Length: 236
Image (cartoon, rainbow, N blue to C red; front, side, top):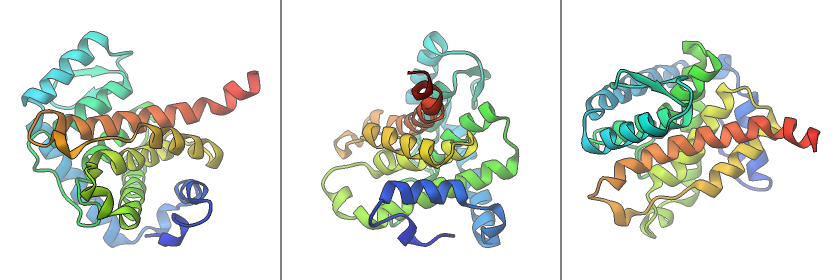
């Protein structure tokens, strides 16, 4: 879908931002679009199945108690909440059963954080289906291309790539759906990178599925920060 050279090397953040902003639907290979649609359907299935699992239920209860305006859907829970809370809840649910898709380069689960962020940001933006698929493709491309740069050492040193790299993929998808320009997208990526975390030491606990939710929430929050950058700096 894109050349890795646009993402790595000098001015890496600017390269990623330009890729996200300038990508055109017409340039997406049909095979990639079809694969994205299958991945989205698969991820929605495991999200629904995982919504009743303990880690997802815990997040849903916190979101119900502390969540913001009901702007985004918590899948499988019959309620709406703030966008960042919905992303957290849906990402956690998608990874709760550990049946969500994997990617060899990423050495993790690419769809759960990206789709969960895209669903929340897409509802905020009132996006259509094509925009959602396009944003999902961009987020998937960003996280897996970065994975080719940093893995396997990144993973072997103890980082859970679903969370670390997934945060950047989630931010890419959310930034595209919220209509950020290149400068705002650079801010979003920077904020996302500062939130990227997730330790393999947590494997085997309920914190592991939380990682996917954390990545999704961080991506939406980062894009939100980026979207307000121009307004705030102009008023200072």
